[in-house]
Image (cartoon, rainbow, N blue to C red):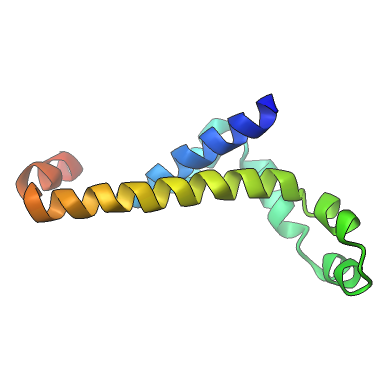
Amino acid sequence: MKNYLQWIIKGLAMGAADVVPGVSGGTLAFILGIYSRLLAAISAVNMTAVNLLLHGRFAQVWRHVDGTFLLCLLTGILLSVFSLANVIGYLLEYRPVPLWAFFNG
């Protein structure tokens, strides 16, 4: 359970980085120490995974692609992107000058 929460929080941070112009979620994944695991999980979505899926071996596919890790990370990213996009949309409409000053330093 502790790892799940950590992965979701790291996903939240990555999603926040993706919303901010000029900041990369991938860079944040590297800083947070999950970049290599993320690349390995994404790389595991290959023909082996497709073959397992076509043969109905769903549990093996889930383990093969590190599904729990990807699901937790994606949950955090999506929560962050959608919530912060609304905040930034509001700020662009009602407080554009301070927002642009924040982004431009």
